[in-house]
Image 1: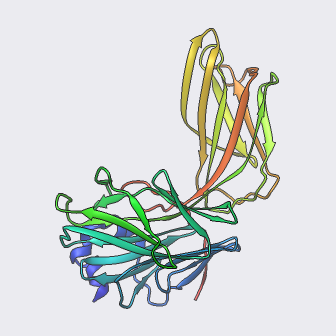
Image 2: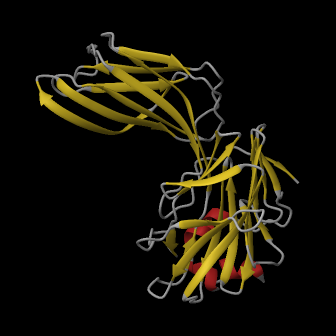
Image 3: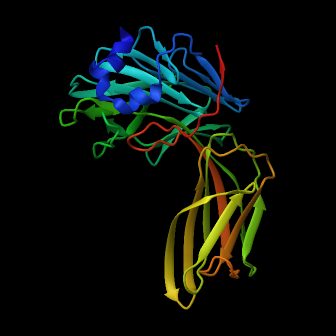
Length: 323
């Protein structure tokens, strides 16, 4: 019966991106999953993630009832629609699908953790003994049934600290939102893996990572450098694997002066150990002739929990499951 809500033309068939993300119904799908030796994801009652010893559990308040299991998550009906948790590799998110108009309502999620919880720039941050552990709940995002971003202007998280356990809140007026819509407070993970800078003229910048990364995560390399005359060509590798150049912003003062900022990325990236080499290279426009750059700096970051509008992230798919 619950499966029909997702697959046989029932209300949840109007959220096709979520239907695809959950995968096929699977009654024996494990509720505890281990995407890597350092990560444990539990779907037993709400979403709980433990990574490198840091535990965070996200539970929507006022929702009860049995879950239906799927290959890549769980789902259960609610008075307003349904609740779903999607887990793919190191990526996991809890979603509320609203199919009945709620008007003005404050949605609440318990944040069960022994970590210190704070907010900055619209994000929820988590720390232990003053040190950031990497968990993030990114700023509010609301999607329509097709996965398009329809977040209302001014929508933001707040924290209720009146009880021992912090509660994440979202005050939302849905009178102008299309039905169904999806509220998405994903648990993401962000941390810096290392970096370097140099003011010595050369065509490369190399350094080694100070932390290991997890298989299936995304990596981003941010590079800032002097500009060069003409069209620059840059390459970057992490552990010998090429990164993709995504964007460049150039402040060009002419004749090779000015500055350049470039972003590289790699997705579903293989695991890398501490001490893995990162190399950035600069070339002339022919991408063969080395270009000497004086001032240059780079930082590399690891991300999980990234989500693109219109799709639940399916890049992180390496997983070991436990019943």
